[in-house]
Image (tube, rainbow, N blue to C red; front, top):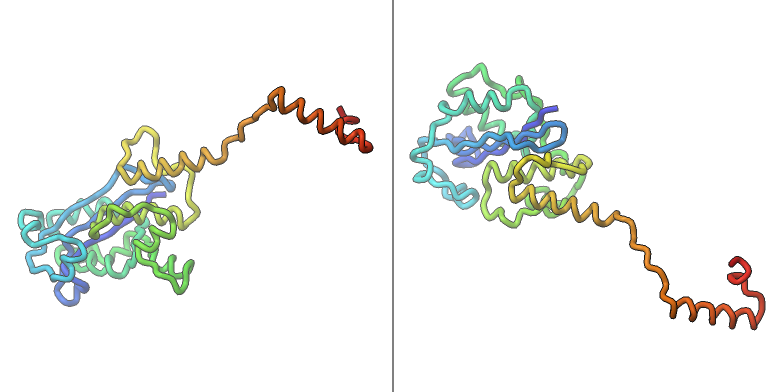
Length: 236
């Protein structure tokens, strides 16, 4: 089964207000294993970015000045997600921007849900943890996913964190990454956690008694025998 964990960053909160997509990150999961196959692109929106949005993701118009417009990356993005099951945190937000961008250049690509199934992890989290915070940061803390390096939002980084959270939310697994694959720092953390988990279930060491301890034990049994019946001596 091929799943794609997807996240976006934007110039603002709503495509209905003229806001545009400026970053998209996609991470592939096949048969509950995160692979090294991913898609990531920054996009020049050709418009201003809200100050509030910059505080969230740190992406500025100056940084995006030499980046491709959405039309330049659209077909490559569509080819990457086509036919997969998308895993998105707060799916209506990201799908709204993706549908808007695709509609501008190729309306036949919309809605994306014609081509992809969608799992909304925010809906899952609210069902599993009602009344609690269910932001990505909150879920990372709840499921023990290391997000200390996440000072700002980033589409590919957030997709990678969400991939780990999703796998843990849906039952976890013993091995996330193939041994022959190079590991990202986040993946090394997950590997180390699995090593610690395996070490916990190793057999306990067998420690034999010393001669002095055996002599003391026999002296204690002899004392019990003098006071009455000693079951331990009878079974030897």
